[in-house]
Length: 134
Image 1 (cartoon, rainbow, N blue to C red):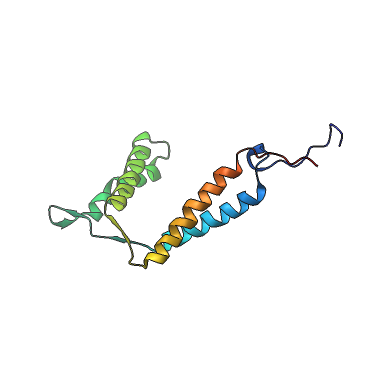
Image 2 (image 1 turned 120 degrees about the horizontal axis):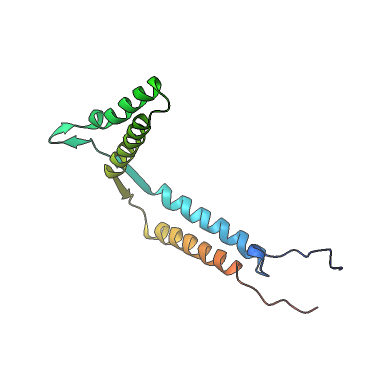
């Protein structure tokens, strides 16, 4: 092999194992998918002093969009629109409840072993491996 030809290097430019990377990636993706499949996300109503407050959280965004339609370069319009989006996103996130659905111990262990083992193999694949002399 001459200097102009480059040999195939493993993940991250190391002599790590490409097979370990693929197996670890598949395990981590499978474990992550199984974990997210067992999670249930629900939301409640937006309440402010006992009243539904979702409509109130839309006001800054609606006013900002209206100002931007009047003048697209208005700094106040952009600030109101961005602040409104932040308020809406914060409201959605704060009113979320996340639950892990009941499952068997075997399924839970399978999920955790796939996820942790896959991440472990991924990290290991980025470290240099000893090359066998032929």
